[in-house]
Length: 124
Image (cartoon, rainbow, N blue to C red; front, side):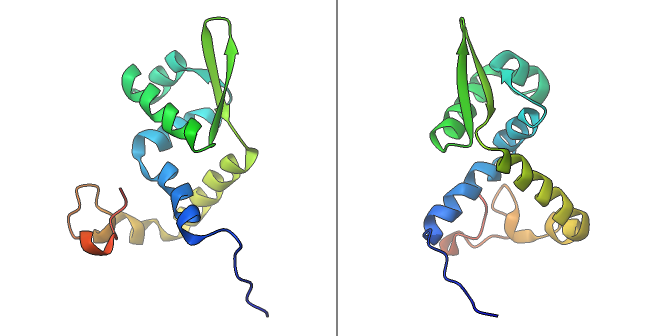
């Protein structure tokens, strides 16, 4: 089997996963898996505040993970690519097998506990 070198730089690939790293952004992406939604719908679906949802949507828009379609006064958001849904589904399948290890990994603590910040190991 021949090893192929990815053509997309590692830093760019890591940036993709930063879009999924934040629990608020992830909850928005999960809510959009069922279909397009307005900010108000996302606030209800995620239990996040409207400013928080709007801020994270701006990030997801900038990163190209979601798109917005204007419908009158409202912006309707949806996943930019069906592969975002597929990636989230694959993550669920993987977690079904390795969730215990991920759940108890001290390097992925949200508060930095157990992480070596100089090495950049904590997911931020």
